Image (cartoon, rainbow, N blue to C red; front, side, top):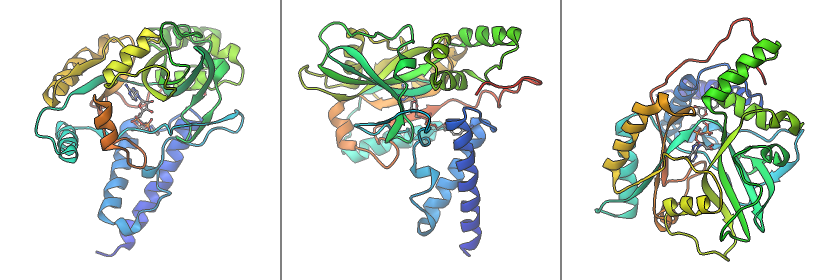
Length: 333
Ligand code: NAD
């Protein structure tokens, strides 16, 4: 096949996805629905796999998020903050569990930790001697924005850890705006004649990246922890991901009540179906579930590819809604 046509299409897709990344990550103002972005992303991935000689390291498929904004102090992550691979169909999820079993050369059941995929913004929060000392956005995965003062205003997040915590621990999790709080905030903003947010994700990301922390403090933000980054070795850590989440909770950090450990891949499917059925009743918006190999030793055996771990997958729900458009109203950025 003449490679000019795919090469041209790949260039087009790279340009489009780069534009959408900027709108979504830097401006908090997407112009296309996530489902459309995901479709183009997949098309590019497929072309890169069919024509590896045309693939480049500069492609959005090889990168995480977007560069940190220059208005903020920059924070270099001690461990990169990655993205997640996606599954959109049951077959894709099954290919993931098959790949995991094959890579680990395991015929017996592998346990997984299942979590809701919160639709907000990823943050890294550093505690030293139990005290919250720094918080940063994911940025491009290597360097994020310093949002310490803004994160300190999140009400369900402790400024001081309790219990038997490590001397130094980096907590990773999602900052989000619960749906009811989002609707109330927008209704009040409309009454005041202020800008409203397009959806809870943009609300969370936009509220976090304020230069004046007094503005963030007025926003109804919440936090759930979902992993640890760097941790000092004065406390023995659990050997499973689920166990580590329990440890985070014992130090006072909030964890989603929907986290479950299951014995095998079939358990993950039951979890997906259960959360999908209850999606509308949850307090917060989710766009799927995240399935992680539960054993930390097995996670280490599986390792990472350029932008995502091999031991986890985001199993997305069917696209729920197109981009929210409120006519005649400016969106908050
Ligand atoms: P992602 O959202 O698919 O997955 C990674 C992120 O999931 C993590 O960074 C973390 O913030 C989050 N997460 C939530 N719950 C988690 C949990 N329990 N455990 C671990 N992580 C959890 O990847 P991404 O790189 O942040 O974003 C890519 C997605 O963003 C795309 O698939 C697309 O849907 C959307 N996007 C949309 C546009 C647009 O223009 N509409 C542009 C860029 C990206």
